[in-house]
Image (tube, rainbow, N blue to C red; front, side):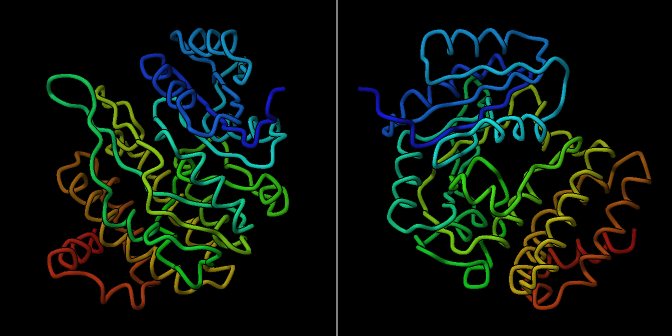
Length: 321
C-alpha cells in the first residue's frame, strides 16, 4: 500500500532547465519519502517544461502544471497553494536544492510541537571558477533567526526570526495558510518578504531549527534576482517589499520584531545597495535608496545602537542622497 503524502512541495520554475534536475533530485533523495510535488512551469522558453514532464512521467509523486503565459513567481506559488491537499506544505525554487533530511526534520518537528510552521537555516550555493557550485557557510543573520532550536516560540519571544524571509526555508501546516489568509503578492519581485512577516505575525506558535535545510543558488550567469539589484525597477521592488514586511509587523503590534528587522536592513541591505548606488549612472537610483534609508532611520529606535562605526557612516551617507 502506498503511504499517503504528508507534505506537498510547490516547485515553480521559469527557464531553469540547467538546474531543475538537481532540484528534483533533492526531492527524490529526501529521507522522508511521503511527499508530493507540484511542478509549475511558468511559461518557460527553454526545456524546463520537458524536465518537469519527464519527472512526472517517471514518478507519480510529481504533478506538472503549465502556465499558458508568464505569470511570475508569486502567481505560480499561489497556483500551487490552490492545489495542496496534504497536511503540510513547503516550497522549493527549481534552481535551488533541499538537503536530504530537510522534510523529515521540519515535518517531524511540527508533528511533535503542533506549531503552525517550522523554519530552518540555509546557505548560498555559489559558482566556482572551475565550474560547478559550492555551498557556503551559514551567515550570521540566518543563524540568529534559526539557532538554537526553539519549539513553540513567537515573534515577540524571538524577534530575530523576522530576518529569515525566504519561502523555501519553511514547512507549514496547510491549515495555517487557510486560517491566516496568506497569499503571495503577484506581479512583483521579492514576493516572499511580506509573506514571511505575515507568517510570523499571524502564527500562534512556530519552531526554529539550526539545521541547514536548503541551498540557495547564486547563478553563474548573473540572472538571479538578487544579482540584478543594480536595475532601478528591481531596487524599487526590493525596497517596497522590505517596507511592506515592516508595515505588517508594525500594524500587528510587534515592535521588537520591527526593530530587529530594521537593524538587519541597516546593517546589511542599505550598505550592500549603497555600494551599488555610489557609482550608479542614474541619480534616481541614489535618490530612491536615500528616501528609503531616511524613512527606516526615522522608524529605527534601538536598531540605531546596533550599528558599528563603519556601517553607521555608510547609512549616514545614504540618508543624504
